[in-house]
Amino acid sequence: MPNVSSRFTVHTAEEKPELLSKINELTLKSFPAFLFQGDPPTRDYWDSMLERHLPFQFALFEGEEMVGGGVTVPLEWDGTLEDLPENFERILHARGTPNVLCATAGLVVEKHQGRGISRDVLLAMKHIASQHDFSSLVVPVRPNHKQRYPLLPMEEYLKWRRDDGLLFDPWIRTHERLEATILKVMSTASIIPATVKQWEEWTGMRFMSDGQYVIPGGLAPLEISLSKDEGVYIEPNVWMEHKVDL
Ligand SMILES: CC(C)(COP(=O)(O)OP(=O)(O)OC[C@H]1O[C@@H](n2cnc3c(N)ncnc32)[C@H](O)[C@@H]1OP(=O)(O)O)[C@@H](O)C(=O)NCCC(=O)NCCS
Image 1 (spheres, helix red, strand yellow):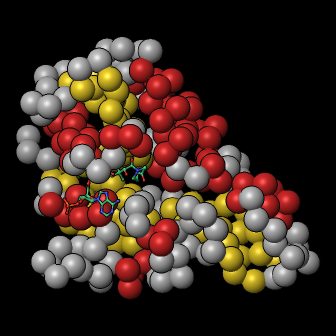
Image 2 (cartoon, rainbow, N blue to C red; image 1 turned 120 degrees about the vertical axis):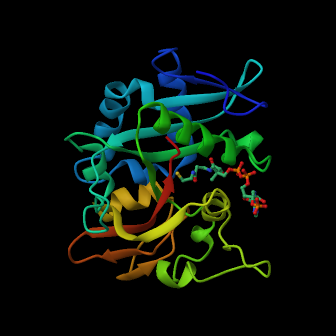
C-alpha cells in the first residue's frame, strides 16, 4: 500500500498475513478483557471477522517497528441514523453489499501513545476506504477518557468542550480534527451479562451488595444483582462519520 504519511509505512494483513496475529494481540491488549466476553462472546466473532476481511486489517510501521494498527469491516449502510448497527455483534455479523467502511478498533502501541499517531491510524483507514470506493468511514468511537467519568451519561460528556472550542475527549477530538461529525450515541454498543463471580474475576473487585459499581476501564457503571447472581454492563459508544474523497 502507498504510504499515507511520510512518517509511517502501512501494511494490510492481505499483503502480510503474519500481521493478523500481531494486530489481534494488540487489540486484546488495548481494551479491558470483559469487552471480549458478552453472550455469546464477541471474541468468537472477532477472530473470524479478522480472517474474513484481510484487506481491511492493517498495521503501521516506523522503520521495522509496529507502532499501531486498525481493525475495520466493510458495511452496508443506507445513510440513515436508524440503519446504523445498534451494537458490535451486529457490526461483526453484517452481511449485504458494503458501501462504507466501519472501524472497530484504532490502536496505538502503548509506548508510542501520545505522539499523535492516532491521526495516522485514521488516515490509513480513510485511505483503505477510498481504495475500495467506500464513500464514508463510520466509527463506533470508544471515547478514551470517558472511563474517568463513568457516571456521566454519554450525551452529557459529548457536550464537554475545551477552552479552544474543541471536544474534551482526546480520541473523539482526533476524529473531529479530521472533520468527522458525530452521528449519534450508540447506547448499547456492548451488552455484557455475566455471573457475579465472572465479574469479580474480570475486574479484580468484590461485589457483596446490589447496586452500581465503577469498574476499571468501564465507560459506564456495572449493575450487580446478587439475587439473580448477575452483573450487567452496558457500554455506550459514539457513532461518527468521516466522508471519504473518492
Ligand atoms: C485512543 C488511542 C488510539 C489514541 O492514540 P494516542 O497515541 O494515545 O493519542 P495521540 O498522541 O494521537 O493524541 C490524540 C489526542 O489525544 C491527546 N492525548 C494523548 N494522550 C493524552 C493524555 N494522556 N492525556 C490527555 N490528552 C492526551 C493529544 O494531545 C491529542 O489531542 P490534540 O491533538 O487535541 O492535542 C490510543 O490511546 C489507544 O490505542 N488506546 C487503546 C485503544 C483504544 O482505546 N482505542 C480507541 C477506541 S477504538
